Length: 617
Image 1 (tube, one colour):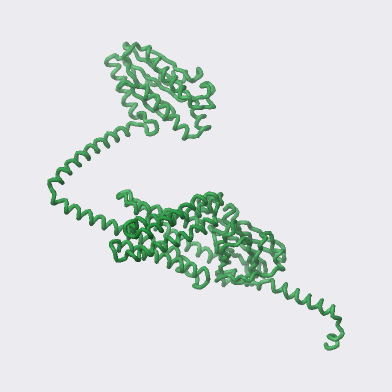
Image 2 (cartoon, helix red, strand yellow):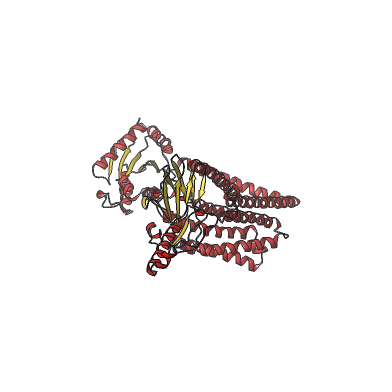
């Protein structure tokens, strides 16, 4: 050996050293293989892999194979990059050491990461490449779950390299915790999460419905803004947890991100306004603290508009400090009021916010690996927010009890002025009686009136029409009835939409009812676009046709555009079938008169529409 060391040329020695360094460097770049065994329920991949930073965002696994890993270390199995314009890669090597098939599920661990690319390689050859993330359509995900999940099939003894690329739309990365799950363990965890979130959202919805009932009953501003706060918080949570993208708008990833930012800003803003009403900061917080709460709420609300245009990262960067200021101001106000006239609401608020803060702290400590992952720490944020919502609801109910006590006191005081109370009650009874009579009249009108057009409905028509025919048969009084139908109405609906179609029916009905000024004239909607007019005749019967012609011309003069009504010169028109019963006709039946009018209406349509076809009987 000494002879070799003495005789070896210097250049060859350097060459060997370089080769040894390259081999060692290459071996060092490869992470140790994670042995996937049947006993492993779940494996947190970030604890065992290597992390690479890609500032250009253009590198591929082959480019990174010889690159130097990043010095950044995952916190407790969680990848958290904060704000970074770089793409980040996690490389892990998996080896199935068992004799059976190693079927596993790779859960990315966050429903909010913008761009997620997963490459599965064997011997440098790509077996699978999945492009997913919440900036891509939900259909890209191999398994329909709120967090991207990729199935992995490992043959006995097989070793694969898994490269996970994480990139952000605007630099704001989400905390990601990739976990390799055994299928049964993942199913159990998913069921647990579904149960927890089902109970959580059920509680929020129940409290929101109860508070909404109280708001409608009392019209107290605190109840209304609490409903708005729960609704905004619920919208944020559903989107933040990935359920919105999974179930409500899976084909609209950009909207998913915009809605999350909007809901977050709205949560802070509505929470601030609720705080103003709940603690009555106008009167009990002092001018300075009240202004801090008002301006913080307004600042958070102002960021709803930029969120509509995709300003995602900046919206959160702006609203989170506003939220912290708002929470701090609320805590300071609660502490200052805990012994004053607002002591009870202040104490409820302090305990509620403490529960939310404690839950948030436990959640983030678990994400950072300081606390172990268990049922409590995994669901601490939901538990804390649920307790917050519940305690604030109790606080509002307590305020309701205070209001009831004050009302009782007022009633006891009012008993001392019995004479005045009697007069007031009598006056109120009269008002209530009038209101009841008015309500009854409105109910009677609603029972016989078509809701859309304001015309009488078909039920009322049957009664009136039969009575008018009977009156004609008894007294030989002249009588007229016409059916009218909007021309090419189906084509209008198909082209302009049903809302425009409803507007046409309303305008037509308004025009006809304004034309029928005599008390004996009655206008009915008989179904769809078909209407009927019943009117008595106190003039020569032939003038009835001229009256109906004025109605027909007036409809055309409304000038409602109708491109598919060629015969009506491009505007909405109607066709009429008019039956006039003279004084000599008797023994007429409602069915016969109606059928005759219907035949005349079809003749009007057959002859070109926008016309009146009349027959005297």
